[in-house]
Image 1 (cartoon, rainbow, N blue to C red):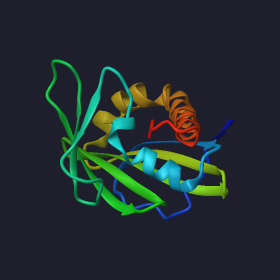
Image 2: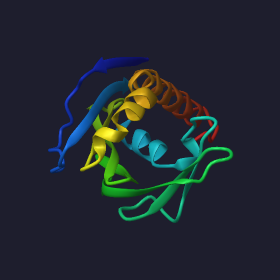
Image 3: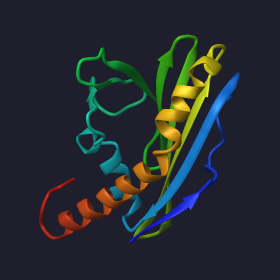
Image 4: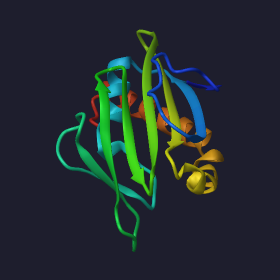
Length: 167
């Protein structure tokens, strides 16, 4: 079962950011353990957002660089920051005099239930120039995307428990 909660607060303090032009946030609760939620989400083979695909240069650690690749376009480079295992991480994408950050947090609601929050923050001197595109790209799809991630996590854990290895 997946429950959706709107506008939940992250449990850790936000980074000091200048000129925030757009901030979106959504949380879901999934019937998976915190450990499973963390290991599943930090494994890029589980990142499913067609037509994009994702690449990571090395292990999922602070400082690692990755890319989002869309067919026929230059890769969008990003960096992993502030990895706190089983708690949170940030994906930071540099833009023209702005930064688009995706803050993920994981909180155990119980032994078999985890709250997953994604907070998207656009900040920087030129952030307002990028705000309409960020709102158009993520504003209408964030809730559905988070629900899809939670549902996939639940299915993967059930499959792993049944003897499959979908993680």
